[in-house]
Length: 182
Image (cartoon, rainbow, N blue to C red; front, side):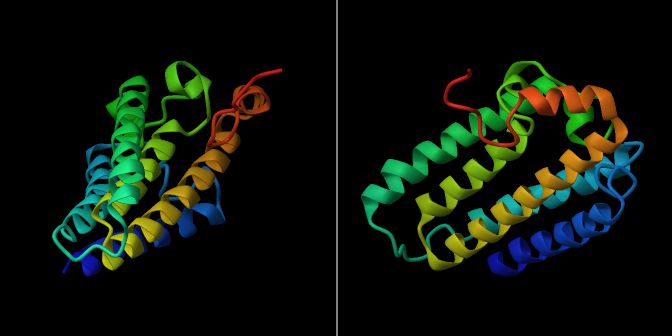
């Protein structure tokens, strides 16, 4: 059931993202006009990614405890903190599909998609922390879908907010913050 839920949500996200990537800024994600329906399906699918992963809890681990607890747990916590900070900065509407323009403050000053980075890190961390074969598969697939989602959203923002986003893109890394700035 866990594998089906997580892979099913990933597959549905992938279809939505692929449709969106065909016409950046005009596809289903991010929607032109967010509403309660877009918020429900976007957050619902993302929640299903996490639920599928968490349901693998208790399966036998294939990873050593040092990797699980020394890397997985801190990555899950750090990713959750970053994701929460980014969500609070962008606002619930902005993370639910409403067009809030180009956000450049808070974690968005460090990289263009900190919410995606936080989600990817938290999913990967949870997958490592659980350490089962199913959790690792789900964590990898869901992280890949979210990585693709950040690229699709990047192209949509570039299409919708040409000048503002071009300036932002010129000074801000895509997903991984720069260690030092020139």
